Amino acid sequence: MYLTPEQQAILDGSKGETMAKVMKTLVMYGETFGAGKLVPVTSEYNHLVTSFGLKMMGPVFDLMQQLIDAGAISQQKFSVDPRPVDKNVPSNFIMNIVFNMFMYSKQEDYEKQLAALGLMNEDAFSCACYLDQMGNKPKKGDILSWAESSAVVYANSVLGARCNRNSGIMDIMGSIAGCVPHFGLLTDEGRKATWIVKVQCKKKPEAQLLGSAIGMKVMEDVPFITGMNEWLGTELNDDNCAYLKDFGAATASNGAVGLYHIENLTPEAKEQGAGLIAEGAKVYVIDDAELERVKNNYPVVWKDKDATPKLCFIGCPHMSMQQLKDWTVRVEEGLKASGKTKVVIPTVFTTAPAVKKEFEKTEYAARLKATGVVLSYICPLMYMNNPLAGKMPVITCSNKLRTYTTARYYTEEEILVQITKGGK
Amino acid sequence: MREFKGRVIAPGTVTAPALVSHGGLNTLASFQKALQFGDKKATCGDQNNPDLYGKEMLGKALCLPQTIGSTTGGLVLYCACAMERQPACMLFSKPIDSLAAAGSILASVWLDGVSMPVVDSLGDEFLNYVKEGMTITVSENGTVTVN
Image (cartoon, rainbow over all chains, first blue to last red; front, side, top):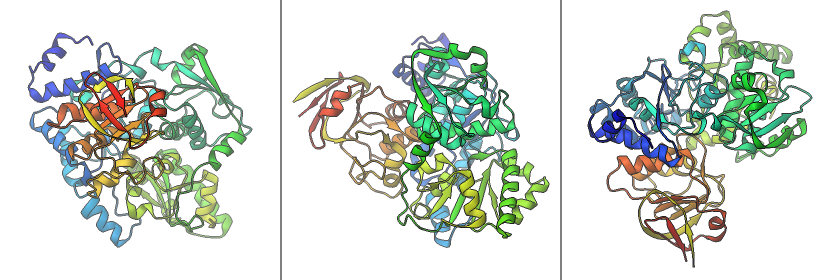
């Protein structure tokens, strides 16, 4: 790999042993994937995937401290994934002990490390850092050193930024050095589509289900998706961005997609059209029957498959402002139709702290509270990732949450019926 | 006995019994319980991986196509190495993915005295041939011998 004289000097120890190790990490990472050079990170802010003070991550905290002690801090301020605990989210006595005394006992200490390393502010905790209220939205063409899979796929696809599907810790290494290896989704060639996905549904496909089907089929490849303009039009408005947020998260978690193009909608597809499709691209046709087949094949890992749900999570990834308003209305209408006043399953909507603050200034906040729905900034995935919560029958319309936990997936309409009318 | 030649990601030599995953290894799901609850044998906790679920990964030659799942995967692998609960080596039939590469590189650069040779691109035939319990020897040059 070619290194500039300054990069070579850092690798040789001109800025100390710790910075030399940071550079060595990036060089080895790049050489593994055939990168020819390191390129500057150009986004204003970074985003880290590791937000949780999980006790098992002691070695990560030691590494972070080593960086801090050596003055090897991020050259960019950064946001980070959501906090794992919120006292407002329903939990029992034992769960509270497990969460606070055992699993996330290092949370406070870790947040101090994040502050020392360059955290944007005390509210900079969300997987959807690119939402307007969060203030970390990269520009088209920006080079990023991010790792959160749902944020990477959104930044690449919807915003036209350039970022590989990095691992946690590797994200901050790039931010400290100010450069990342040039390979994969940073290159024009790596952004070409090797799949053509033809959507031939008779109704607008559920975002999380369509993303799941595509992710499981193409895995880490880049799909070029046609047939969506009938449902989404050709403009990236708030509704479409929310749809693509949920769609992308499903492609990234059910497969390993880091970039997708949607014909006439996403920035590079609008500019380059079919020129984005690589020679010999494979074809995948999706219709309503295919989506039904995918959904019916999800394993149900509840011990009692007929259990009554005890909790419902909506908002993985975090909900946008418009989604919060729309869901408030949907829940109200559902309750009115069923003659009830409160949701019949404890339900938590999750969103970014900055969105939550803005939402709470609107009339919708009191209306949502009146339905019994809890609004939280928590990461539902981190809440579910323990043996106690893992045994609970939890339902969700997030395909990411379904994939990584024991939560059971239902479509948005099915979820709405369950929380407003009841049923299993 | 058969030999397979791959690319060295993290150098080293080792001999260990094989443990084989034909599907992708979900690093977070596989290691989380072991790291969180003090299981020194690193018993695989991924219920969605029938090849590995409930089996001890510590000290085994872990043979797999790629890793999958959360992008915390690299740091989980790094933690497993730091806590000395890592496999004896990781042998990939396909080119290594970015998450496993990050984990093995971070361990190699930032941890002293931790050895986990990693070899990739061994080919589909490697994964078809190797069976659980076979003896694997990894050489410095990326040659993998299966007995």
